Image (tube, rainbow, N blue to C red; front, side, top):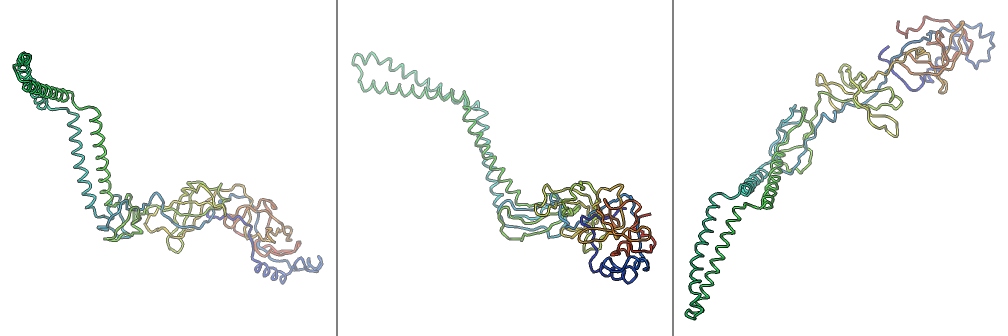
Length: 432
């Protein structure tokens, strides 16, 4: 018995209907319990016609009906925000356009960022050349020039030293002026210093650059490369594209407008699949599992019912109501569904086997207590019952009746115990 509903509260017949039924029954034959008539008078009255149903053991397949709204699936939607400041140069879409992943939506003025990229690239090339030169060491020509300069300095030093040695005896005899001798000594010291410098330069070139010098050049290069990457990233941000397939919504971009960083300019929604967002009562939480089927009807549309699947349940309940957010996925086959549409969802609950059930119309209410009118031996008697789930036209009775008991479905409300009845054909609520 599919397509049935579950209710958590006992059935109630409106008091106005109850009063009308009671009044009509008193006119037919039996008086109410408050009547002062004797049992003999009641027995002589005309039997009241009632339609009956029989309590039977069946399998109930209940559903729960929930009301909600269609929403976009979070992971199937994208907000397009501007990561940098800039002026909008062109807007390449309009709201409602269908776009594919990678499609350009908005282009910012990129002249400033392009200049920053060019400058950074030039600096990177310069720093790379410096590092390469240090790593490769001196060129052979540089070593040869340094060696020649060192040899030249040594060659120039020898005659000066020999000349000073030659005049040393003359100075001892006082045959050469002291000033002249000091001048010759000064020339020797200068030549020795130049020879030492040339030799040190040769040794430095032959030894190559120091490791810390190479490390410094490497760090400077990496810093410049990072600046280049940032400049290139900012340049890529000037072209705002969609990361997913979908439809453009909430477009908030105007050509020529200046936008700030992180300002949302558009939203892209993939409508191939949507969520029906409903609130599940807490008492049904243990009966619902992801993967269960649900039938969806779109309110205020002429769309046919659709089949959905319970996709997920929220991790916590509403502390005030105990309700839990539930999301039912539905495929948008004909692209007719849109977020914001109201929806009614019927979710199938696990079947209840061996359920003693009677027609739901047989249950009345007396100040919150469900009761039925049992028909036995041609007489009516009220019986309090405890109800379980309701599935369509049937309701489960967990206490108060047994299989085979006959209950009044129509015409039995308000009859006094022992009232004679005339049984009409049985209610056909049960399936064949």
